[in-house]
Image (tube, rainbow, N blue to C red):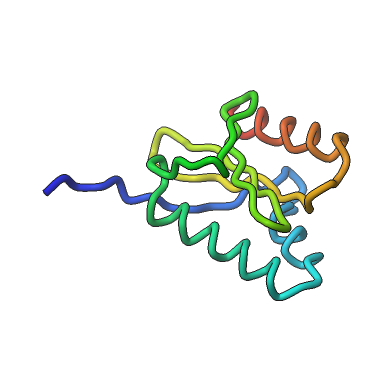
Amino acid sequence: MALTTPWRVVYFQSEDGNIPFLDFIDKLDSRLARAECYAFIELLETRGGSLMSEKVLTHPYGVQEICGRSVRIFYVFTSDSHIVIIDGLFLGQSGQVFDDILRKARDCAN
């Protein structure tokens, strides 16, 4: 039996101490959207890098995106088996917010 890598989910924290993903969760107004976020986090913790589906997209700077019915979650993998959740978006949110997520991911990689 092959051993799987133990993944640990952590959250990106800006220099000012802000954790964008937790702010995102606080803004969710439906239980369904919150449940979807928590289900995605659990999937990342249990399946990590083996999580492949039509719902996972890859962007610049190694950013992965998992898409649901009402939310999009952006994360990166680190070399020490951590998954850093950068931020989340509501479906249909502006491209400017997405550009900000890519900047955070670039900062995370440096």
